[in-house]
Image (cartoon, rainbow, N blue to C red; front, side):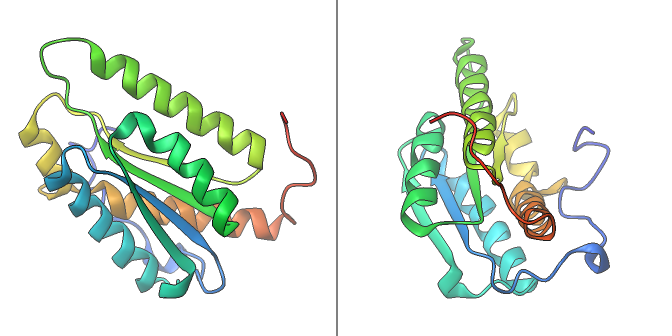
Length: 171
Protein backbone atom coordinates (compact mmCIF):
# COMPACT_ATOMS: atom_id res chain seq x y z
CA UNK A 1 0.00 0.00 0.00
CA UNK A 2 1.29 3.44 -0.86
CA UNK A 3 2.46 5.36 2.19
CA UNK A 4 0.34 8.31 1.06
CA UNK A 5 -2.64 6.11 1.97
CA UNK A 6 -1.22 4.67 5.22
CA UNK A 7 1.02 6.11 7.91
CA UNK A 8 4.23 4.06 8.09
CA UNK A 9 4.37 4.45 11.87
CA UNK A 10 0.81 3.23 12.47
CA UNK A 11 0.27 -0.39 13.52
CA UNK A 12 -1.61 -2.41 16.09
CA UNK A 13 0.82 -2.36 19.02
CA UNK A 14 -1.11 -5.14 20.76
CA UNK A 15 -0.35 -7.44 17.84
CA UNK A 16 3.45 -7.17 18.09
CA UNK A 17 5.35 -10.01 19.79
CA UNK A 18 7.79 -9.27 22.60
CA UNK A 19 11.25 -8.64 21.14
CA UNK A 20 13.05 -9.73 24.32
CA UNK A 21 15.82 -12.17 23.49
CA UNK A 22 15.80 -11.42 19.76
CA UNK A 23 19.12 -10.29 18.28
CA UNK A 24 18.82 -7.56 15.66
CA UNK A 25 21.23 -6.11 13.16
CA UNK A 26 20.65 -2.65 11.73
CA UNK A 27 22.60 -1.56 8.68
CA UNK A 28 22.29 2.14 7.84
CA UNK A 29 23.37 3.85 4.64
CA UNK A 30 25.40 7.03 5.15
CA UNK A 31 24.20 8.40 1.79
CA UNK A 32 21.27 10.79 2.40
CA UNK A 33 22.18 10.74 6.10
CA UNK A 34 19.64 13.44 7.00
CA UNK A 35 16.99 10.89 6.04
CA UNK A 36 18.63 7.59 6.96
CA UNK A 37 19.48 8.69 10.49
CA UNK A 38 15.82 9.56 11.03
CA UNK A 39 14.90 6.10 9.76
CA UNK A 40 17.43 4.61 12.18
CA UNK A 41 16.06 6.61 15.11
CA UNK A 42 12.51 5.41 14.45
CA UNK A 43 13.69 1.83 13.96
CA UNK A 44 15.79 1.72 17.12
CA UNK A 45 13.10 3.29 19.28
CA UNK A 46 10.48 0.84 18.00
CA UNK A 47 12.71 -2.16 18.75
CA UNK A 48 13.38 -0.98 22.31
CA UNK A 49 9.72 -0.07 22.82
CA UNK A 50 8.78 -3.68 22.08
CA UNK A 51 11.31 -5.24 24.42
CA UNK A 52 14.56 -5.51 22.47
CA UNK A 53 17.58 -5.13 24.73
CA UNK A 54 20.11 -2.50 23.68
CA UNK A 55 22.91 -5.06 23.87
CA UNK A 56 21.01 -7.20 21.32
CA UNK A 57 20.87 -4.41 18.73
CA UNK A 58 24.01 -4.25 16.57
CA UNK A 59 24.37 -1.25 14.26
CA UNK A 60 26.79 -0.58 11.42
CA UNK A 61 26.94 2.07 8.73
CA UNK A 62 27.79 1.51 5.08
CA UNK A 63 28.58 4.16 2.45
CA UNK A 64 25.40 3.83 0.38
CA UNK A 65 22.30 1.76 -0.22
CA UNK A 66 24.08 -0.47 -2.73
CA UNK A 67 26.33 -1.67 0.12
CA UNK A 68 23.42 -2.60 2.41
CA UNK A 69 23.31 -6.30 1.43
CA UNK A 70 27.06 -6.79 2.00
CA UNK A 71 26.79 -5.03 5.36
CA UNK A 72 23.74 -7.13 6.22
CA UNK A 73 25.64 -10.33 5.49
CA UNK A 74 28.51 -9.17 7.70
CA UNK A 75 26.14 -8.35 10.58
CA UNK A 76 24.31 -11.67 10.21
CA UNK A 77 27.62 -13.58 10.29
CA UNK A 78 29.27 -11.59 13.08
CA UNK A 79 26.37 -11.23 15.51
CA UNK A 80 24.19 -14.22 14.58
CA UNK A 81 21.29 -11.79 14.20
CA UNK A 82 17.77 -13.20 14.19
CA UNK A 83 16.76 -10.37 11.84
CA UNK A 84 18.71 -7.73 9.93
CA UNK A 85 17.12 -4.39 9.08
CA UNK A 86 18.56 -2.41 6.18
CA UNK A 87 17.83 1.32 6.10
CA UNK A 88 18.60 3.53 3.14
CA UNK A 89 17.23 6.12 0.76
CA UNK A 90 17.66 6.29 -3.01
CA UNK A 91 16.11 9.43 -4.49
CA UNK A 92 15.23 9.22 -8.18
CA UNK A 93 17.23 12.13 -9.55
CA UNK A 94 17.87 12.83 -13.23
CA UNK A 95 18.91 9.34 -14.37
CA UNK A 96 17.53 5.83 -13.86
CA UNK A 97 20.36 4.81 -11.48
CA UNK A 98 17.79 4.51 -8.70
CA UNK A 99 16.04 1.64 -10.49
CA UNK A 100 19.26 -0.36 -10.72
CA UNK A 101 20.23 0.31 -7.11
CA UNK A 102 16.77 -0.43 -5.70
CA UNK A 103 16.41 -3.64 -7.70
CA UNK A 104 19.88 -4.86 -6.75
CA UNK A 105 19.32 -4.18 -3.04
CA UNK A 106 15.83 -5.71 -2.93
CA UNK A 107 16.92 -8.77 -4.87
CA UNK A 108 20.05 -9.27 -2.75
CA UNK A 109 18.12 -8.97 0.52
CA UNK A 110 15.53 -11.48 -0.71
CA UNK A 111 18.36 -13.87 -1.61
CA UNK A 112 19.99 -13.42 1.80
CA UNK A 113 16.65 -14.15 3.49
CA UNK A 114 16.37 -17.39 1.55
CA UNK A 115 20.03 -18.39 2.11
CA UNK A 116 20.03 -17.70 5.85
CA UNK A 117 16.43 -18.65 6.55
CA UNK A 118 15.92 -15.45 8.51
CA UNK A 119 14.54 -12.00 7.67
CA UNK A 120 16.63 -9.36 5.97
CA UNK A 121 14.24 -6.40 5.98
CA UNK A 122 14.11 -3.87 3.13
CA UNK A 123 13.76 -0.51 4.89
CA UNK A 124 14.88 1.53 1.89
CA UNK A 125 12.96 4.59 0.78
CA UNK A 126 12.59 4.89 -3.00
CA UNK A 127 11.09 8.38 -3.43
CA UNK A 128 11.09 10.69 -6.40
CA UNK A 129 12.05 13.75 -4.34
CA UNK A 130 13.79 14.83 -1.16
CA UNK A 131 10.45 16.08 0.17
CA UNK A 132 8.85 12.65 -0.31
CA UNK A 133 11.77 11.08 1.53
CA UNK A 134 11.44 13.46 4.48
CA UNK A 135 7.68 12.77 4.59
CA UNK A 136 8.52 9.06 5.09
CA UNK A 137 11.38 9.58 7.55
CA UNK A 138 9.31 10.91 10.41
CA UNK A 139 7.24 13.41 8.45
CA UNK A 140 3.58 13.42 7.49
CA UNK A 141 3.60 9.79 6.29
CA UNK A 142 5.30 8.41 9.41
CA UNK A 143 8.66 6.66 9.58
CA UNK A 144 9.68 3.72 7.39
CA UNK A 145 12.20 2.79 10.09
CA UNK A 146 9.35 2.02 12.48
CA UNK A 147 7.67 -0.13 9.85
CA UNK A 148 10.94 -2.00 9.21
CA UNK A 149 11.43 -2.64 12.96
CA UNK A 150 7.90 -4.00 13.35
CA UNK A 151 8.42 -6.26 10.32
CA UNK A 152 11.70 -7.56 11.78
CA UNK A 153 10.13 -8.29 15.17
CA UNK A 154 7.16 -10.10 13.65
CA UNK A 155 9.27 -12.15 11.24
CA UNK A 156 11.91 -13.10 13.84
CA UNK A 157 9.15 -14.16 16.24
CA UNK A 158 7.47 -16.18 13.49
CA UNK A 159 10.75 -17.90 12.71
CA UNK A 160 11.16 -18.85 16.38
CA UNK A 161 7.57 -20.03 16.61
CA UNK A 162 8.06 -22.29 13.61
CA UNK A 163 11.36 -23.63 14.94
CA UNK A 164 13.82 -21.73 12.77
CA UNK A 165 15.27 -22.81 9.48
CA UNK A 166 16.18 -26.47 9.19
CA UNK A 167 18.46 -26.05 6.21
CA UNK A 168 19.95 -23.32 4.08
CA UNK A 169 19.32 -22.68 0.43
CA UNK A 170 22.47 -21.92 -1.47
CA UNK A 171 25.97 -22.30 -0.10
